[in-house]
Structures are given as C-alpha cells and as structure tokens.
Length: 208
Image (cartoon, rainbow, N blue to C red):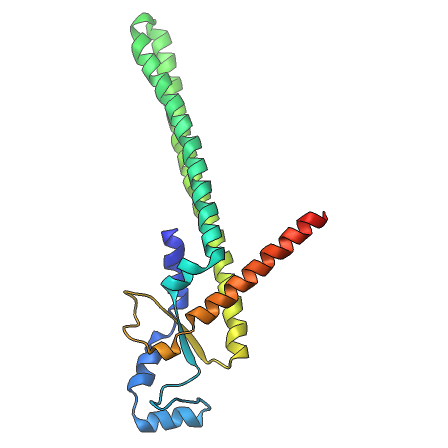
C-alpha cells in the first residue's frame, strides 16, 4: 500500500510554496491579499488557508483501512496461489532429477522440454499477477482519491476555503501553524460519511 500513500501524498501536497509566501510576505503584500478578498488573522495569515496532516488522515480514515485490508488479503491470496504452482513445478523438477537415469534419452529430452515450457508459463503467470495487482492498486488509488477530493471540494466551498494543503512529515511543508490544521474536521466528516454508507448498504442488503 506504500505506492498508494505516496501517490495520494503527491496529489494532496499542492501549491505548498503559497503557504511560505503568505507567511513571509510584507505588509503591502498582505494588504493586496486582503484587497483581493482574503481574510486574515492577527498575524496576517489568511484564515481561508488550511492544511491536512496526510499521515494522520490515512492512519485514521476507516475507508482507507478497509481498502488496505482488502488489498493485502487479495495480495496474500494471489501469492499463495502462485506459491502452490511453484511448489508443484518444483516437485516435478525434483521427480525428474531423481528418475532421469531410468529414462531413455528421448524420454529425458521430452520431459526436459515440457519442464522448460512449464517454467516459462509459470514466469508469465507471475508477471500477470504482478500486473493484476498493480491495476487493482491503481483502482483503489483512484477510488480513495475521488472520495477525499470530493469531500474536500464540498468542504472547501461550504467553509469558503481558498486553499487546502497536504502536510506530511518529511514533505515540502516544514512548518504550519496548528490553527490552520483541519485534519480532525476532515477525518470526522469522512468517517461519518463512510459509516452512513455502510449503514445504507446493510439496510439495503437486509431489504433484499
């Protein structure tokens, strides 16, 4: 799931230079911002700029946990299936090596060619599984992003935010005032929506 987190972190960490600019700009620049319609607190920091702690969001978002669990289960299932095929192939190889002296040259050659084809098929199957997992992870990635982006879009409109940044330890934002942190509000809203969706699905299932 590491790729999932990295991709979403990149999406959420947009326009971080704006926060730096607004924090260190002089009074005349702040006045221009105010004239443009941006409200500010006593320190001149725009009140309609906020950030989300991405690490906290992913750690506590119930839907993310569900997707992560399902993806890990899917990965474990495919790995088990692949391991079973590998074990079966290895048994055939061992059997061939143990009995090769009892075979004619033609028989040994035929079995060796058969094992070579099976090995190639096994490698192709492994590549197919890797590709399949990548596609499923990409779908999960998009689904998760759509949910977060959709919620943030509505939240930003409802609360008149001009910009919502993503903050992550080790990322591009080195400092952000805690007063701009809306992680808990966003997390609470996302989890509430998710719980309502789960409840609706349960009711629908019971009705059917």
